Image (cartoon, rainbow, N blue to C red; front, side, top):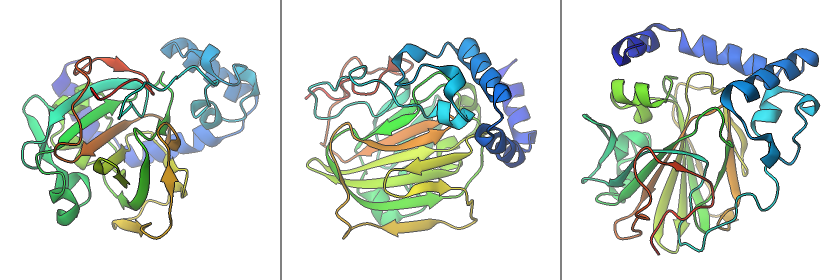
Length: 280
């Protein structure tokens, strides 16, 4: 299927209804039917169950319990690096923020202000900084870990569309990551402010954080903001910070001068959680 046709179909599909149905199916506890769906999924996408704490497909009560499965201790060792990859996935784009513009795909950029839900003061802090976007495919581990020690200061839920976030859609839908539903997490670190944005997508029924639990649903029409300045929620490098219930994308923002990317980090390359993201 051509990219153009794929994008047209994305525009026409009832994305919210499909997502709500997917959420229902993924949370259903249907015994043998659930096990059959998981077994099919593992075979189709090549999921490595040997890495899971529990490799027994038949023991998962729901698809989402399987999808957010924890990994065995030691299978994702943390690199000796200031910043590590927060997820398993493929690097979509990374590099310098040109004033306030992030590269989505060839010919497409979007602004930091749009990404964070319109907060101009927050967005301005990342002018001329660095960014990285990682796409999580269906086969990947879907828990999200913090790249460096950080103290949570704010979380923003931004309502939006539910387009697929695969590379084809990223090439064809302008402003995709600032258009889809997302959860923006702001951290204070020893290297300045850091934003980790969890971007929702078609069939991504929910996003969760360890400090809040399920952020969506409910899906609201308005931006929702939580201030954690005085809550002393701190995470150490590599700690789990959240998870996707079905896959999506993470977009990270770093302030100017905070980091230099590991030369091995290049667009379209696969990465694993815990590998070195920065040179230092």
